[in-house]
Length: 555
Image 1 (cartoon, helix red, strand yellow):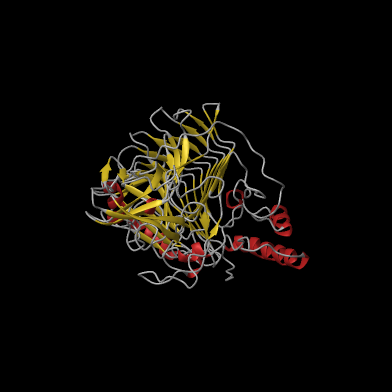
Image 2 (image 1 turned 90 degrees about the horizontal axis):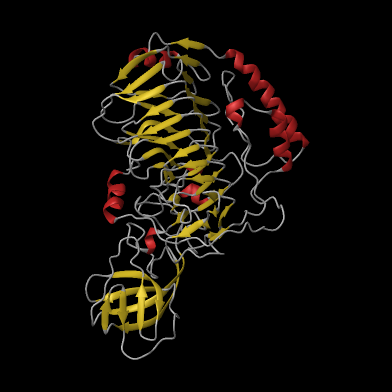
């Protein structure tokens, strides 16, 4: 790992546990040497909060330095780009106020540097007249999970900015901030990517890596306030390209934890791994959902929810490719090379079609023998497919899905398949490395592992145990997800995050010596109980999804 005597944080926790005493001694020596380097940091005072004065101060700084921004209000019309591991420190919320008047691209664009900490603290950011939403990141941070770069953004306020905060392949913490949403910020506060995980592209490296629950290999979003002063059900997060993040100990007002899957993001993969715990959700009876996971693995536990739709509250698991076609992956119709499929099991010709039904002559089937299979129309009308909900002796009833695009006429031919596992669907993880654009299928694919999502000890309205609701039939309970069930062997990562209070040497030594990981056994699962959840899907439309494709900030 690169070292720098001026670094504030050359202390990152190793990605794998230190195996013995020698490693602990080495770690201690590193911490002592790094701590002595703190004295070498220089404080550079910007003359004012103006863009030119702050840019000049940043230009004169070196890794490990602190740039202070005095109180005052300044409108920035140009971006500041920082490629150094420095701290930019304002005089506090309500004192140092930066107004975003940049019309295209980021207001602040930081590339994290190896072995160093980049920190933004004590600044209030307000909209200053940006004419269009900046989905690529009003504040944008790009890092690496392999070079020791780290990030902290704390004690700031974001007042209905006309766009998002974007973090790509960032290890660190966003803490003690206030995010205020009214009408401008595109419904999302923080967007997490891991495009470049393990030096990959499109999030492929993240999908080929282990999950690492309970470690520091995430962007932590903790102890923040997310306040929705507008309408709708805005996401406090979104995530693409193998994103890994943790949402914990936040106050969430009328908000949801949102993600994207391997679908409408085109070549980019979906979110990879998420933990959501110890948050307080407070609603105004206009929102049912705590969030949505559209690919990968999530742990959802110990959250308190009030003012949402008690009795119906859920965290939805959804795989949009089971409902429609998304380039370049296609649809999960039972024939895609990216999925694990079987069949066809039946070929037939429709004698009649109805509202999400198709009938054949005679009585060729037993009741519900095709439930949870996939029906694919081969000829007659436009191609299409859907998940089968049930069947009688000669009539199949299928799901309208999110987009409800399939219907049958007499004479249409069809086949019945089974999608055993779809690429990157909720409850699936890891797998061989995919490369190329368009993507090249690895030998032996689909070799992804089933790694279930777990929900436990989430309470809504003081009574309801909140768990996962499945939006698609290919996501199967007791296989891809478990409700009211703690994850075996799981221990959450240190709270607060070490970057919040500095490195706590004894705690880090202890955790490394024990080899903390998601597979550290703690005994069998214990059920938490709770009523069965309603499985109704979130309300989305193909128009909205196409907007995601067109406006995707990674394009």
